[in-house]
Length: 392
Image (cartoon, rainbow, N blue to C red; front, top):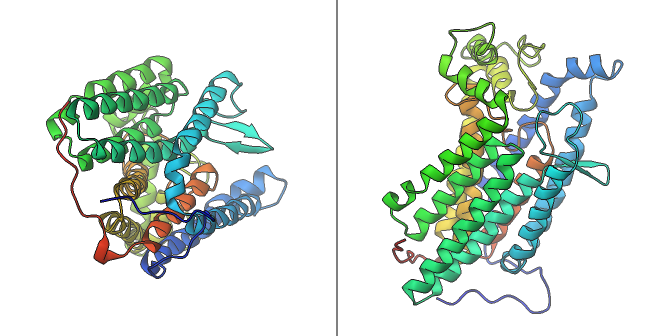
């Protein structure tokens, strides 16, 4: 099927379908939860570090959330077809950012080179690289689908995998284990949707193993995190201290929680309770009920995202929507998995909920793209063809 044609006179266009209410409703619920729990988990720390101002973190978060909403609205009206055309230059810009991170000195108070300061703002290039790579993978995989020559398709796929490995290599040097896991997971998902067999994808795992090994060699503190995960709660005063504190927070919440603002674990027991550990605070203050409501909202986002992908008008939007959805799903799984001691600590924020920054703005942009794809869909003419099986 030919790709949907775009208007020649404007990058913005009118949609065929109404606003995806369940998707935007779930995202709004998550953002509201983020505002509430960023405040309850950061107020005391903010008061102590800013001479009595308890809303500094909340104010910063609201500003970044506002920027995220603006970006969401922009991409909701921006034709997703133009993202395909811009995928290559945006990815190149992301590569420049990844290289700049390695060259410039790391920011004070950080343990890894993940941020650069641009116009007074701290930006995480790896987050931009993740979504730029998703767009470029979607573009190239759709082009490979259109190719009629197996040898040409195989050559293009090898080149694409080489690009992914290069991206992961730059991120490994920072190091950023969570981003390596996320990009690897999204890449494997897109390759599966493309038609690559599971057995062939498993052959790529040794490459990921080498990458993780490289991180462990570069940064000893990563080894300590893995060691803490393996030991579980057997060493509560040392390696597994934070794991134990996270489980204590969730356990104290019980079914109904201690109440908003009543968390005790946020007082220097948990690292960054308003960011990486925010799910533990939610579990402590709202209990099992609040945690399940949060998970339900994430489930709605994931289900709607996959439905948008399945109703895609063309191959590019199919891969793009699937890549975005799998990225948000993986981010949620990694963050909650760490808080539940199911995964080693990686420093992954919870999408839409954790203290705002590049992750929040990019997540909102991603939802805007999903809504734009949904807006232009017509289910009676949706592209539903599976990609041809591809062999390496």
